[in-house]
Length: 492
Image (cartoon, rainbow, N blue to C red; front, side):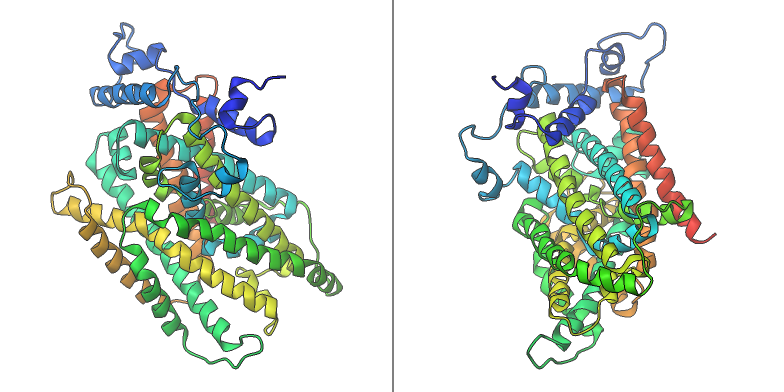
């Protein structure tokens, strides 16, 4: 039996991943032949005043239509971008090329896989394994959808930043400045958390190396040393320049997960002997909201969605879907394994940073701390890239040069100033658990759900399939409300 055209577009025949990607393509593919879309493009007069849009949105919609036709030949049929006869191992493990789907997926995955991963076992302890997996899966699905919204809106309107997309949708410069500010604050918080973890990991790694004499130094020196080591990697404003840094993050985390899973059976037995337990389903609304904030933060990679979209070559709907689904699938698989492995080891005794549960002196836990210190180091330049860009754009808007592009020198200055500021904060702050919860519930939820909902409703809505667009919008708003509510619940 010959494979169908849809199967050929993904290079595989059947399977759940194929169905997920096909579903996303059917949901997000625009239709410019509807009455709403034709009115928005200015091709059809709305005599009944049902679809009449603002004049400012006509030009972007026409540009989207032209770009869609260019990037999606044969009226949206997927044209295979890879060489058909290349072996699977070459396509998966060959050299990373700028603009490839693997490069985009790796950058999105690396942006999400940071210090927040250490809180996943604690999140599972708040919900149980079944409810935790369900919540993490729903967060991954809705996150993938919002990534696709942003990447399509950016690339198909030739927009260079997240803030510029929001400005295009709402027609006001204040919206652009507000988003840049939130990206900046979210990035500063994430980078500060990474440096705080470095301040915890690095002294522990050097203090008791297996079979060697260690030496001690303060966490402040560890924080400053990590920042100095990562500084050269922050100078480039091109996401492709970090492609090998990005792909190393999930590989190193995989080693950490292997260590945690190998230790889990013995630690689980000891935990049960001490009266601990592991549950499948434990629903308490406030505890679930707290876990949701952590899990939402686990997929917080939207600040790099636009750089990835602009760097992606041949950005058809199918390739955008493939990049986002693959990236979030990597995050989901790694964090599910880490979250369940850590929770099974310690049960309800799991701490916010689950490595604190492990006794000192274990060689494998020393290796875990070393691996996680390396992960955090690799995540830092990827997280700093969009933060530095937003900071530079805020400076340009204040100096009345909002139309000017962020140049290499301005990006380097912005990255240096922000890294120095985060280093100063991290050297003087140690409690990171509450920071991660607030980041996930307030700032990450805004970037992942609220702002994409605005872009979807005001910019993409007339071109989206009517059978599903209401559900897409409601899912974005639901997760946005839950994220904000989780922050409120922490103080009530």
